[in-house]
Structures are given as C-alpha cells and as structure tokens.
Length: 151
Image (cartoon, rainbow, N blue to C red; front, side, top):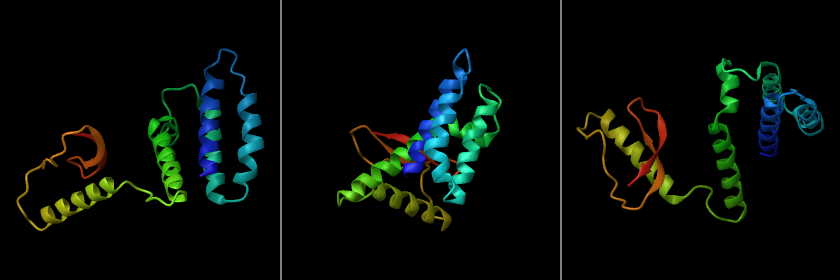
C-alpha cells in the first residue's frame, strides 16, 4: 500500500513537471530514484508498475496515450488506492474493512444475477427503498459494476 501511495505521488509530480513551461523533470526523477526505485527492486510487480509510471515522463503531455498509460492519469486509480487505505485503516482499528451496506448491496446484486441466470423474470431495475442519498455499486446493462447514486 505504501508503494501505491508513493506511486500516486510520483504520478502527480510527473504531471506537474511535464505541464510546466520549462519541462524540468528533475523533481520527479529525484523522487522516483530515492523513494520508489529501492522498493521496486524488491518485488517484480512493483518494478513493472514503476517502469510503467516512469514511461509517463516520455509521453506526457499527450492526449493520445496507450490505454495502460492513460489509466494512470484517471481518477479511478486514486479512488482504488484510497479505498485500500480506508480498508486498511478500518481493519487496523478492529472494524470491518467494508461497510455492511456495501456488502449487503453486493449480495443483492449477486442474488439478482443468479435469479436472472435461472430464468426468473425480474425487472431491469429494482428499487432498494432508501430515501437518503449516498453511493453504492450497481451493475449496468453490460454486467459491469459502476458507482451510482442511491435514492
């Protein structure tokens, strides 16, 4: 998790360095060599992520990045790391790593999918009856999980 946080910090440094008028990438290189390179040398998966992140130095600024590189710049990566950090904090405090409502919602989606697979006639959308606003995961028509507003 620490490596993922450092990697996010490096991505932001690269974004800042490559968007500045003088394109000075020294701060990003210094951070990468002092913080991430020693950790990347210890695990092959860290090394691959580190190399991919450093590739941004070559291709930024550009609107035409390969999909793997473009994913590094999307907010989804930040959300993913933040979710892991939150889960670790909750777990270290003796709480559940995931909110119970989220687990119940996943269970409900699973039950809906199993019912549809078994040929049961279910409407496309089933209201869950919550009046407060919040976010939850819901499956779109393609079977992918997406965040939606719960009403």
